Image (cartoon, rainbow, N blue to C red; front, side):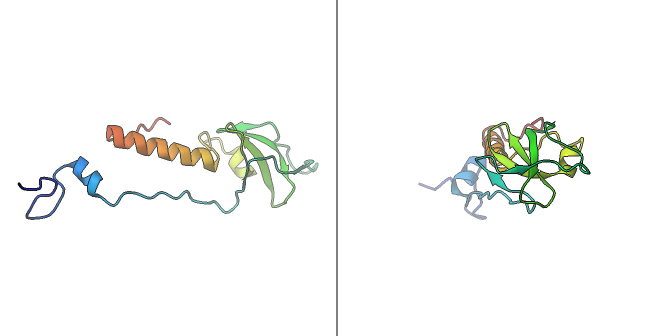
Length: 128
């Protein structure tokens, strides 16, 4: 009996399911951003100097700004809705188009959800 997974002359998979089963697969590694750090416990913050606009309490994307990072570099400590902490620059906080910003863990989880949705439906929903 002939194997129907592959077409004989070109050795290409017969359909999409056969291609997924016999394919090499996809590996995803989240990218690390240079000016960003990630913690599960709150890092130390310092009082905001008088010459800098206080951004504490501002909400953007999935973050809430907690204070100025004590490690320097003009970074602000933000808390994601998942409970993890990261740093962001004031430029990212003040950007009005930055409505979907999220931490590395939430970004990775969202990527996995979108990939699973694509495998199930064959398309991605661009609304989220």
